[in-house]
Every structure is written in C-alpha cells, then in structure tokens.
Amino acid sequence: MTRSWTRAGRRPRRVLYLSSPIGLGHARRDLAIAQELRRAHPDLRVDWLTQHPVTRVLEDAGEHVHPASAWLAGESAHLEGESGEHDLHVFQAIRDMDEILVNNFMVFHDVVEETAYDLVVGDESWDVDYFLHENPELKRFAFAWMTDFVGWLPMPGLGAREALLTADYNAEMLEQRARHRRVRDRQVFVGNPDDVVDESFGPGLPGIREWTHEHFDFSGYVTGFDPPSAERVARCREELGVGPDELLCVVAVGGSGVGEPLLRRVLDAVGPARDLLPGLRFWVVTGPRIDPSRLPEVPGVEVRGYVPDLYLHLAAADVAVVQGGLTTTMELAAAEVPFLYVPLQHHFEQNVHVPHRLRNYGAGRCTPFEEASDPHRLAEAIVAQVGNEVTSRPVETDGAVRAARMLEELL
Image (cartoon, rainbow, N blue to C red; front, side, top):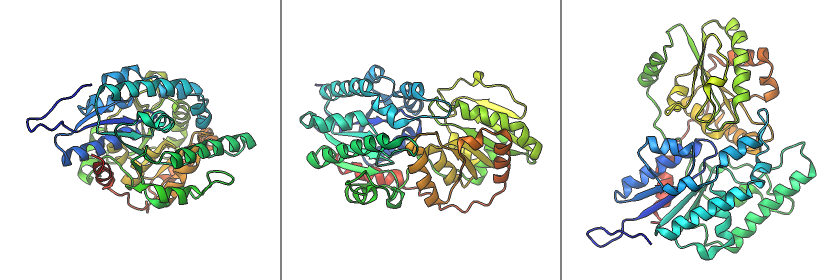
C-alpha cells in the first residue's frame, strides 16, 4: 500500500474524487468543491478517477487524474449508443450498463486497495455506491455521496412495466440504505430542499421529498464559477465579434454526444429566425464529443467544439437554446439570460427533475422536441425570447463552500 509522510510524521490527507462522466456538469461543480477543500486544507492531495470528457476539464485545470482512469469502461459512449433522435431512455440505458458498472467498480477497488484514502467522494458514482452497499466490508474510508436528483421515475407512455421497474430500483436503494447506513457517511444534495420533486418512490414506498429531507444535507446549487461582471460579458461579446447592433443566440447541448439532432434542428431554424430578426447571429457549441465538421455550414452561424468557459459565453448571449440538462440550464438561470430548453425524450431527469427545479427559479421555457422539429415554430420561439425581461430567482453563489464544509467534516 502506498504511503507517504510529512516531516511532522503525519500522512497527508488524501481524497479520491469520482466525478460522473455523463455530461460535463459534474466536472465544474466537483472541481469547485475540491478547490474549496484545498483552501481549508492546503496539504490535501486529490486524485480523480473519472473518464472523458471530465478528464479534459480536469487536465486543463492542472488536476491529477489517476492513471487507472484509463481502465474505466466508457459510460458516455454507452449512453450515446443507446440514444435515438433526441431520445434517450436513460433508465433503461443504465439498466443495460451492468458490465460497465462492474468493470468500473473493480478498477475503483484496485485503486483504494493500493492507496489509503481518507475520503472518497462519489458524485453520482452509481457503481461504487451500489457495490459498496452490497459489499460493505470493502469500505475502509469515509464515503460521501453527492447527487442533484433523487428517485428513478417512470416516463408517461412507457406502460406499467416501466413504473414497476423504477419502483423496484427505488425500493432496492431504500433497502440498501436502511440495512447499511454506515456506507454513506454523508449524503449531499446539490440544491435546496424545494428542488426535490414531490413524487413517490413507488406504490407503498415513501415520498421522495420527505425521505430526502430526512436523509440528505443540502448544499444549495453549485455553479462552479463567480458570476461574470458586466464588463467581462461585454468583452466576451467583443471577442466573439458581436457588433453593437447585433444579437447573439448561443446553442449548446452539453458534454455528451446525444445532442446532434437538436443542433441540426436549430440550424434548420436559423434562416427563418434571421428573416424575423435580421440582426440575430448564432454561436453553436457542439461540445467535446460531437465533431463540428459533421454539421452543415449555415450563413450567420459560427460552430465551435469544446469551449472551456462556456458559462461566460452563455452569459454573453441575448437568448439561448439548450438541451434539458441541469448544468447548462442553471448556468443560464444564474446569468439571467432568456432561454429555451429541449429535454431528451424519455429522459426522466430532463423531463421531471430538471423542469421542477427550473420552475422553482422561474427560469427558461420548456420546448418539446416535436415543436423544435418545425423550423418555423422553433424560429418564432427563439425570436419571442429575445428582449424578454428575466425575473428568475437568483442562483446561490456559495454552494461549493457549503458542500466543501460538509465534506471537510469527514477528513
């Protein structure tokens, strides 16, 4: 087992951080929390066990990605393979991911056997959480579980079997937690108590909101950045070449590769939108897993791949069109930019959990993919948002500090 000691004879505290690779939302918030932990404990050593595209964010930030990350099986690639045209039955996709989860837990187990970690933080690391509950004798470290939603939920139209399976998954989680409470030393909900949906885990099971309030601590939302000043936003618009008489629409689909159909629908709507509003320009961000060269060239559109500081460009927009993921929509809410969000079909988190939270903040307009598939309807919806006064609730800015304090108690 690897051990190193300071001159005072005390081993430096070590954290293994597991950041979900499904999208880029976890990366920014986890990085912000880790940085706050280091401010409180300058000797803290943080190793990251995660996958692309999170590894790209971490490497750009100078973080240490554990070499064993290369042995992890690809979760993002699996979900992309399960997706259709702006359609991802995410619950079924995760049910079909057993081989990947087993492989990745075994990688994790090898890592913690080799190195003594004081704390393991699992940000929606479903594999580690599940198998630690099934094998609690393997836990020799403090374990903190982090998530921004609680409860698998059935999507309407998928029948009684879907409702039965989601309830069964929820029941198994509740039973694990009741049987092995010592596995999770801390449960942190990345949000506020009213961000938890007021739904049931299933027939005969507790309410999700009541159970979560009883068992979780709440950090508030973690943006992972300080709100940019008006001067910085103006400078960003200038760097993007947006003139004083022009308007900017930013289009983004997160860090996975399932958003290409939505990008193509928006590109189809550019012409009609610019007919309605000639000064409107489009800045399309494909993210790290979609090749920009696959998209058609359209007048008035600039296409980019991975953008490290996307939150800044979103803040510089007059309007935005995004997928229904929590991170990008909350970044727009924090920036007080009007936006449309188009949830992936059959994705329970994007269709239930995220809209519930956005309604709490009074942010964004939910646009079904069917509406977004009509270029003229989508163009009208985009133009209608331009110039709208944003009256959303301010997004908290101290979430990373609050989360770090919760984790610090385990060191």
